[in-house]
Image (cartoon, rainbow, N blue to C red; front, side, top):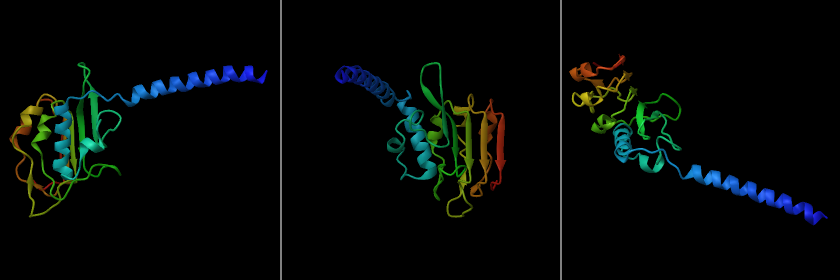
Length: 181
């Protein structure tokens, strides 16, 4: 009699286990669809700020999915692909990406064609050894998407404010606080 009551319980347990395994195997293997060039542009852009030691492709193989990067947000577009829409660099949160002493703007920043918001906080410290300026070129590549642009507390950021920022037709917020220009 006890043998008969164990058999249905064992079958139910086995079915439950197989169902859980099926669900987990489907979610583990699926990454957020992202164009490879978008992913590489993101990794290269971040390396310009935090240093070449940072290996994003190994640390964050799915930056818009299961392994998001702190300070990076993505949105799903109608074509079914994920694109980077927000980048915040600097010590904003405990685990935020912090800039290296030799941080620089990478031209890969301008390859993030869906970028809506860019915030650079406390990345460039005051130093005559490594003066940094906001790039003058390529802002037109972000003219139709960029809505918010912030440079805060970057005392090593000097030079002219690029005229190209005036071509950002969708820009709603421009914050230039505590910099050296």
